[in-house]
Amino acid sequence: MPIVIEKLTYTYQSGSVNAFTAIMDVSLTIHDGEFVGLIGHTGSGKSTLIQQLNGLMQPTSGKVLVDGFDMSDKKQRAKGRALVGMVFQYPDYQLFDETVYKDISFGPKNMKLAPDEIDRRVREAMRLVGLDFDEFAEKSPFELSGGEKRRTALAGIIAMYPKYLVLDEPMAGLDPAGRRAVLAMIDDFRKQLGCAVVMVSHSMDDIARSADKVIVLRDGAIFASGTPAEIFSRSDELYEMGLEPPFAARMASELKRHGFRLPGGIYTNEALADALAAYKGGDLNV
Ligand SMILES: Nc1ncnc2c1ncn2[C@@H]1O[C@H](COP(=O)(O)OP(=O)(O)O)[C@@H](O)[C@H]1O
Ligand SMILES: [Mg+2]
Image (tube, rainbow, N blue to C red; front, side, top):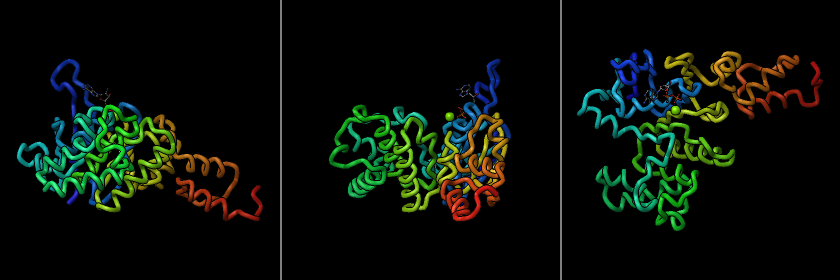
């Protein structure tokens, strides 16, 4: 069963003079196990949209169904919410307990799991996010670096084994090595538990590496949706929106302008390298 968003509109301060419609008539489906990348300029409505997925905000109109549970209905919402793990843009707001261990075990405890199972999940989640148990379990979340806080927040969510893992800019503020590590860990977690991932990111390169489907938001509406190859072949339109296509897509389009006969749909460094390798030993100045 998927997440289905039907004609969703969300207006902040609805009915007041400051009313602002951040999401307008958005429909989309998130299938089991799918990795959906959500991109768009700052202010395009990405955070507003994903916060509808766990029922934190109620639609002004339209519907959000999580595995059939209507998130506007109080009783159904609790059931839908149990399937969705949300990691917010600013992990500081998500950490509140005395120790990293207690923080990560908070969710599993609420699920009323047996103590052994809670302990097993906390250890597993810490391993998955790359936090050494002996070093970090008894530390206060407030002593952690930005990257470690992010990992702790993520561990607390994955320890609940969500069916849908929703991440708002999980790599923001990390250096390139940190970004790769977080992305690899999301991939690992997804393989291990088979969950779907919805990831908001500014980085087209990060989305290009992992997403099965890319959704582009513009002014609160879906501007485009498709496979990474489909979306990233529309480099010019992305540029116009202030979004920078993945490096490989830009490079491929530049090389084509210089007469290279490259196949379409290149958007990862690996695909670009393969295409260029085909020229090896040949005449590069075609
Ligand atoms: N609490 C709020 N009250 C009024 N407007 C808001 C509020 N939060 C966000 N907005 C507005 O809604 C729009 C979408 O914001 P947001 O969903 O945070 O976009 P994104 O995550 O893509 O940067 C922006 O124009 C923003 O200013
Ligand atoms: Mg945002």
